[in-house]
Image 1 (cartoon, rainbow, N blue to C red):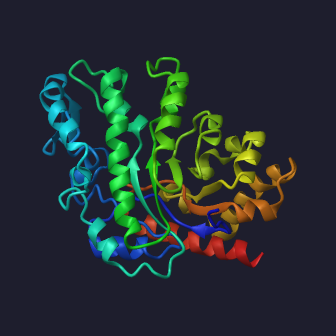
Image 2: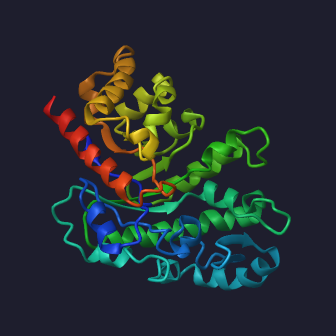
Length: 336
């Protein structure tokens, strides 16, 4: 069972352009990670980063865009299938991740866990569109390859992390997942539930999902997940309303990573460690009233920033402050 007790971690995307500073910040938490740095270069955008070697995807660095070509997919699919048995075909290249190799070379022995990340298949498939501006996930065969591709990417990454630490995991960044609950989506909740479940069952190590949005939480709480990372600052009041699902998720050993510390300057400026601790405890109080004790919640919880912060105008100041508050709030909870 994964350890809880208010361990600190964060999603991988950071606003830094200075690699050493990003690495130092990522290693300052209880569960460190390798940083993704889209401001450093476009290939570190999480969609571009994991598009490398996907058949049919064209990455335009000049325009900072990606699109899917059916014609190119048809030309490249046979080569992809041949290479799908070669693990190194799914490696993170130095061109797409400045930090990954440096993270592997760090002394990680003092940490209980370490984590990597990849874009989730639903977000990946909905974000990248074809010539007719249709998300590539709507094509059944392309979607099958998409799930297969990310399974291989995650397995390769997990194995690399596992060579330097006994307890790694790779979680999925799924900002687009909430879109499948929109009635206009052609990739339906029912289909996604089956396919996502099958996908998760094949992944190595603890299985985790991070998203900043507000989906139907029962979809994820009832999935085969070990870790659910939530923007609790914005959406925690809705998550806790799924009382029965939350109780079952925690009682079977799941971890909720409570993203309780905002990263937007406008929100962060009016908060303190005490105010954010109280905000989290108010969420827990609602669950207390429905049979979940603070002991269980503390034992099954991590703490994190609510989301990445790429849009603030203060460079890295907000994220640095957010991480400092994160460590302080964790200490507050542990001393209680």
